Length: 80
Image: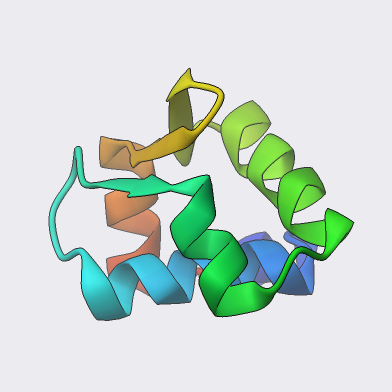
């Protein structure tokens, strides 16, 4: 899938984590949860920025990411 190749590995892993734990659009996850799951790797922040730029997640505040309808569709189409 072309869209998958355009996402970084970490971005795909974050979307997969959403698929495993939060099965609906609008689901929220804290950065602390991502840090606990992925570690405090700077690549996580870069991947969140990438996902935000593509419209897969929004960042209502600095500590939270929220799955958008587009992100929900992507994880269920197999983009991630």
